[in-house]
Length: 329
Image (cartoon, rainbow, N blue to C red; front, side, top):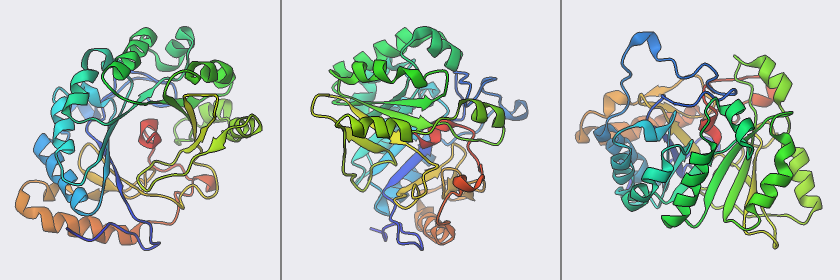
């Protein structure tokens, strides 16, 4: 086994976010308000199944224990179930997760589970069908809810729900969300809206800090859970009277990056040392053959020496955040 991935600040990396497509069929106001636009009419060349096998094998060999398969919308790939099976087959990978908009879950989540998916996150930005449509641009609220029920039927002990906090849109729904998770094993994670550089007016109009929710939770008897080494960045709270949990992802908090344990590989094979990083390290030229594995690992490990201490979002830098699914792990 190769040496555990570690940067110059002694942060160890147990968690890989692997994008398998940039395509999405929703038109969320904070992410792709005009829908997915392919580059210059070219057919996108996303990582193949063999390339996905090689990159996850390299990370697994370097101590990675969790892989989250993301997009775009990853379930749009026809070979999505095969991707899950490929990732789950890697020795050392104990958690295989995905983040999805949920529109295909009711039909396919049982086969995803059988292929080796262990954790699932679903984006649900409102419990009001009309508001859900306003935010996502798609009238699929009831299909997504059916998909969540199907995930429990398939044997998932917990479903994580990602909700991007939007002032004057869904920020008043906390009581409804709390009621929803009281009797369901759902971890509801509120993600702060982020400034992408292209949507400054949206950010100024709808950004709301998660601090007010955290203060409300603490004042009402919610307690902070301890993290494990391959957990994502959420601060997770539990309450003795609730089956569900609340998570808060607040990337503008001062110490957000101190516990960084994640690296990201894009759908076209670039390694991003920060989820918000603009520049990527090319890996695809080393994904053509199994014999390149030592060079692939060497390049990944060498790149970590250049990883910055922080994403510097709190200083107004926006970086590359074309897709808020990139932080909802």
